[in-house]
Image (cartoon, rainbow, N blue to C red; front, side):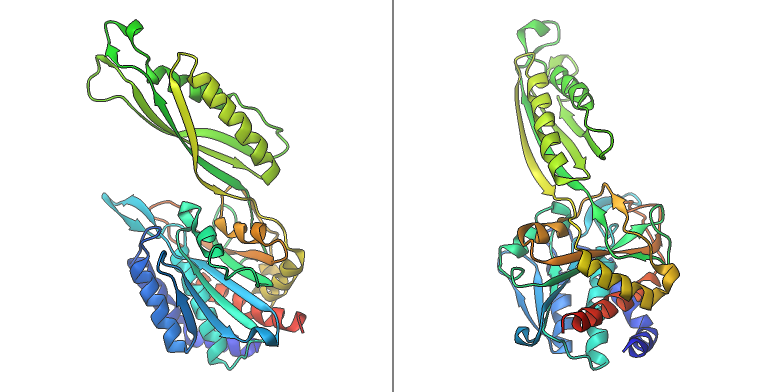
Length: 381
């Protein structure tokens, strides 16, 4: 069916790109992907694919095939946008490629259905909300729709610094990420009598120095940094009694993240309370590092070569970026899962408010995902 897939993609190029433009111009932030959900449901209805939605979040699960006939394959796309300042206006903005991911997954299923493919088992089409919150995958997991999956595919656009247009990798080795929010409470006082107060700015200064002083094994990528500070009011002659700060903590491996978090938490609390301020620290979001699934990666390698040729296959990138996709395998270790890395010419970079990429990459993504599903069906027979 390789010929049929290529012919379908060439014929439907305008439709594929039109879907992308619709999703791009109707961006919605985490947990509020209401119109996005409606659109995806309408597309699944047109394909005659049954689907499930949920009362407590905006995710959508499509079901195509019969699990008694073979393996259960999951294909997942994230749905949410970021809230960003774009050309002077604050708005929901798809600068991480989730609009492209939804487009490629939707049209992969459309392609296979319209060329007459019959699943050798069950395909679960997973449109996941709130990836940017770090909690969207967990929301899907809680619905019990992942536990019977044998193979799970995802896809993500890669920036030009990491991968050229026309290239693709069978996996992305994301690192672990934890975002922490801290709070410092002190005592207000007049600026002329600082000894009567507890200055939370002093505490935050100590916290920054302590976090930057945490050292880890340099042979394994890891970092911790303060990324947000809010303290004091408009009066410059008042010792402030309340501050908030944020931390971004990353590690290439999950066990390194565990150790790093212990060190960072100790550094924050001990340094910030030296002046007797009260310091609290809590995690807001976390993402685990990718764990390799060698069997599925080999299958995807074959699909990439079929779609792009031998020159199109590149090794999996190792990136400090995080992805909540990897919670699926952590929760269910039996799953063979991988996230395809797709070269797109994306610049200036992911999460830049004016990010753009070569839309022809959407066609490559549909080819790769379609061929990967076909290949899984052959291998699992």
